[in-house]
Image (cartoon, rainbow, N blue to C red; front, side, top):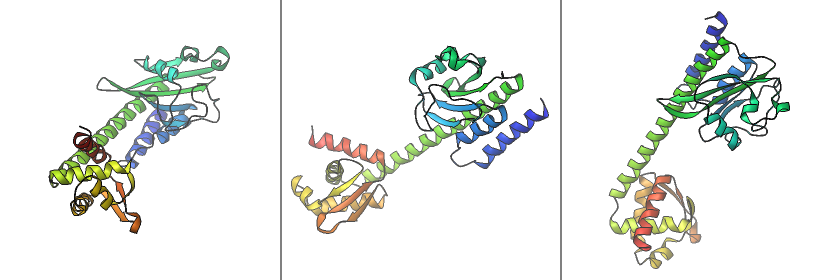
Length: 261
């Protein structure tokens, strides 16, 4: 391993260490690799979403990525071709990705599937002009690819943990509500027509044949559990914002079982 390669891997390690506990910016990783290898670099999810990118000013853009930023999706057919690559391929002729001969001329690409425990999470893709990728370039990309896979796995685990916490919060809150309170809250949340809106509780209580006090008490319990936020709008009613998307779905389910069955 050359001193240059060692230095580059250390810089990547330093970047990841500095962002530990925070949301890793894949574009920063792409930027480092792009500068090291004079390349345009992309991290693409399995579904084709651009998670990070670095467009090297010295490399001309190619079809499938022109005008597409982070958070947007690459060309669907291009992503399908990426997913058909099952191991790292270096110095790929971009004509095999659907580019025409003129656009692909003088470009070399490297495609590395992002795999963790046999599961395809995405693709690490980079290309440059007038220069093929050497063995040390490939080693660096393989290393970055592995680190990106670990970061993606950690992010997925965090999202899964967050969802579990949300479900536990809604389950605990529902247990504090009587059956009548559950159906009353379900009627209120359904009437919002989304995650937020304005309601007149006295009118809703009359419409669903429950007392206003039951409905208001149930809403207070949910607010104490931090599942909703309420704000008085005076004679116009009460503004309600649902803070837990799973809570919204659960009360929609309760509403449909009670009122649409």
